[in-house]
Structures are given as structure tokens and as C-alpha cells.
Length: 355
Image 1: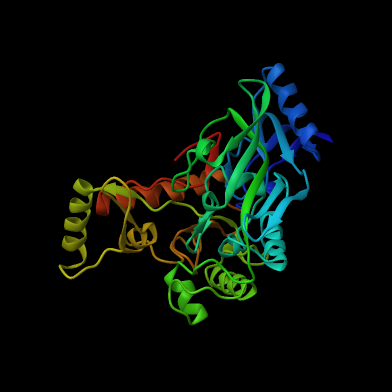
Image 2: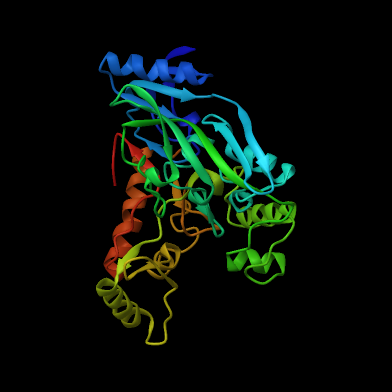
């Protein structure tokens, strides 16, 4: 289906953005490939939109073709106790519906990713993760349209260059995700609980396995407490979820951050941190934001504010523009840099503008 001058705000969870000059909705993988190939052959600008949960589109909209992915299909390739479940999922399937089915079927490995908005095809792009799990742990293959080669390719997990909230696909326009294959465990219990708050909510120790349904319910409860389950009546959920990623810093910068934190907050301050690869350390973006002076609800009663439930979420309080969102997020980023010397990186993709 093809339309012109279509408002894009309604297709994103932040609910901002101007119109698309042309919008093509595709319902099959062949239609998706054909639509992208047609735009490329015409040498026109292309934007592929799935669930819109990780996009902040400029107020001027998009002067080109937006391809809206609405493909469907979940196919079990194999299932046994030794190899687990090999399941292929179309890019346009709703992510949380697939998680819910996995829990119901007894497929373990993505239950901690319950409640995340968006579609399956977006999950490998930023290596979606939460509550101790990330999709890189269970993705076996990603089937893509390679715009450069003009061919369908299948990339193994090792070829996807997965790192924290990043992959081969993020920041690149070369690949369009068509389908994702997951390797899940056949089990009626979760993978070992790897997140302290989730373990606390379940009343178990870290590393415990619990019934899949209980794990999903506990994750959804945690997300609702933080305004991270979409609700049209709750402006705390008019967002892209976490707007900034947790920064990963080298030892040299960590020493400076620690010194700045002690000067600002006292010598007994403890900065939440976790060891990362190559002598780097991951810091809590939420802690940095809060201790730079930007607390929950910061910005109210303006059109853009931090969530009243979760410091990491930049939210549209109704009537905000994309420019409002960018200006507000820029202020948070710059304030954290001034306070601690760390420059936060935005998690959502900004289309037609930047911080």
C-alpha cells in the first residue's frame, strides 16, 4: 500500500516527527525487498520503519520514501532437548508477542526481554537487552537484504559484531533485516536470573531459575514501575525507553569521573560500575544523570521531561516537537558532561537532526 504526505509521529513511540513524502507498507518479505530495491534504483532517500520505538524523526519529516515493515511469520525449524528450538521470525512480528509465545511454548532465553516495544527486526540492530539478557545471546542468524550487493544474505551470530547496544547493522544503511532466527532452550524455567532488582522482585538469589511465566510477570512488573510498558494514557511511556546508553569508559577516564564525583558529592560516594572488556568499566547513565542534578520529572510542566518513574527516559508530555526533544536531551547530555566529564550517547536514532 502506498500513501503520500503521511504523518510519522503516529508511527513512533515518542510521538514526534513530520510527514513522509511517500510511505509504502509491506506485508511480505518479497514486498519488503522489492520496495527497498525500487527506492535504491531510483536513487531516492530511504527510511525503514518498524515499531518506531527507537526513532526521533525531525519536525520536517522525511523527504523520501518510508518503508513500513508489517511482515509476519514464526516458523519452528527444529526442536529437541539437545539442540533446543531453532525458530525463524519475520522482521515485522511484534517483539513482545513473540516473547509471550516463547514463554507459553516453553522456549527459554528471552523472557527477561518481556515488554520491550517494537518489532523483531529491530532487535539485532541495537542488540536489545534488559534485566541481564540481550538478544545476542540467543540470535543464531539474521537474514538481510544487502543493499550494496543487491542480494539476500544470511549472517551468523559471529558475523553480526554484537556489542553492548550495538551491532554491524547499527549506524549502517547497507542492510535491511528481513528475518531473525533464534536458538532457544527447551525448558519450563527461565535462564538464570542475572539482574539484582529482578531477583529481588522474585524473592530469589541471583543465578536462580524460576518458572518462565513468573520471570515474565516479574519483568513486566519492573517495567511498569519504570513507565516502560506502553500505555497511551501514561505520558511517562511516550518515549524511546532509555534515551542514553550506559557509558563504557577506560581506566584513565574512570579516575577523573571518580575525582569529580567525590568533589561534587563527598569522598564516601560510590559510583555504580561494572567491569567491561579491555580494561574498561561500564557506568550507570541513570546515576550520572540523577547526580548531575536531573531528577525524575525534571522539565515538568514543560512539553518534554524526564519520566516521573525512570531517570533515563526522555518523555513527550503531550504536544512536544522533535526539536523540543532534541534540545532537552542535549541539555541532559551537556549537564552530565559538565559534572562528570562523561559524554552520554543517545540510544534512539535521530532522523533529520542530531543532538
